[in-house]
Image (cartoon, rainbow over all chains, first blue to last red; front, top):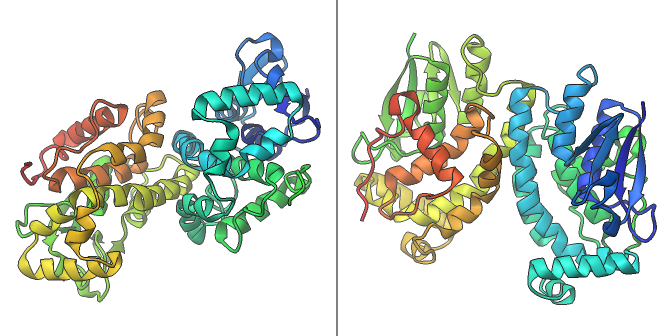
Length: 232
Length: 232
């Protein structure tokens, strides 16, 4: 049966930029599972599948609804054990939690500093109101004030990615010889940036850049083909 | 056969503070392997076992010599597969590289800022000369100038540990229900601080603090019993 992925979108429903939804999209591709996506704008996320406070990604697999990309990956490995594992063992599944939290608390802020206004500019008017209200409450200042604090250069992002750069000097993927969910976690953050950012700030001339290129081309170029906002 | 661990020491040969050697010590205890330690001061590390540029930890297991705590952990799991695994699977082994690099590049600087002079003060005179020369070259300033830049409070350390704090809100150890080498990597950094620091700066009142306490008490309190420099 085809699994349903509720996937965040912009005013253009083909613009799919959520880092967390990208983690899940690559999880499906990794396991070779059939899935289709339903585009959902910010203001419709909470009520997906009859909920009242949902966050994307949400999947429906038959009667089963699962939320949160890490929980979804664990669900898929348990439910489809014959398809390639997203964790390769109990240790990998547990330790991946640290990658998730590192990415969320270190990498996501570095990305947000580069593309906050670019994301805002791609939303439908009512989603812009939602985005502005929730983010301004979080930051304690206007979107424009937040955005003005940070130069649109790759320096801070590359500094944040330094631990990964060291890892990729010794192994092809975070998962070793082939990617695991841990790789898709970091990929999601960079694809979020790639699909939305109007500045040329992705990592370049580095092991991380090569690794990201490799992942963009995998699964018949699913990442590479994604619709992106034009730069400049 | 008893495995030999060459373990960094201070002027007092019972003061064992190297974060990397603590990772290996807990690896042995985890696997229930017999080992004994040989104390080595900074100026004798390079020439351990006839080397010319060694770094601790170095182990000798029969005729086999292995260096670097992550390499040692991989060696121990391969050589002693019937003892409890330090990685619990291929995924865990690979993903642990990111924990190693995160700890080395994020956590170690935060610890160094708190206990650099305390370490220096515990070394024998010729080791002090070595330590001062190598670290001043690295920092581009005197030890005292470096040390004066950083307040001796736990604030920056706790901020650096935030991803781990989130992980430990949902699981007992980085390794899941029980610790793995990934846990010992972070433990090593905090035990380095605990054994040397004269200021009260260890994490407190947090999941990380509870987790560290648990690890200090494991293996018959091997971590808890370690000789520490007196505070204050």
